[in-house]
Image: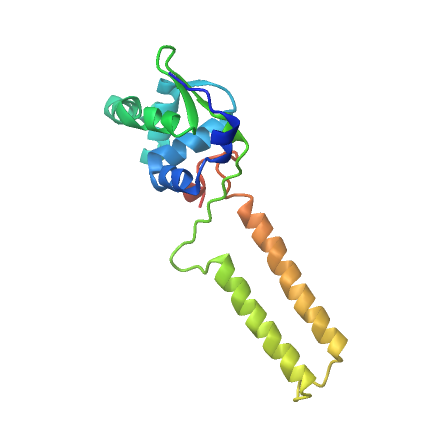
Length: 188
């Protein structure tokens, strides 16, 4: 049965608890679905959707074994653990699960970086170094950097960071847990 989460417990929803939940695919998928729905869902409905995402199938295509495997894992372990940690409110009697109040207030961003890609933090570090080099060469009046005034080089720096920030904003909108569609790692 769900327990009341006090204000101090809400504030203490630690990064460790969140990282532990997000490190496990089933729990991450469950939180994603619960954030999407924003209302109580049955354990069966939750298990079916998570099984569908795990098996990359539509719910109607799932076998009874695929549904059962996820349902049992939720029933025996995941839901009670997430309830104990204040992530969800699990009502064993009714067979329903609701996202906890503390989780509703948390915006979970999951940056999924394919192997051939560069994380945004590294990209911005490289962009800063490249722009610093350009500004230094322009300031030292080394050709061909004397062809444009210093103000133009400052505009180049501003534009490169502005365009990069816009592109990151666009892609990051697809990486929040609870947004429409499948979980971020399946959206690619």
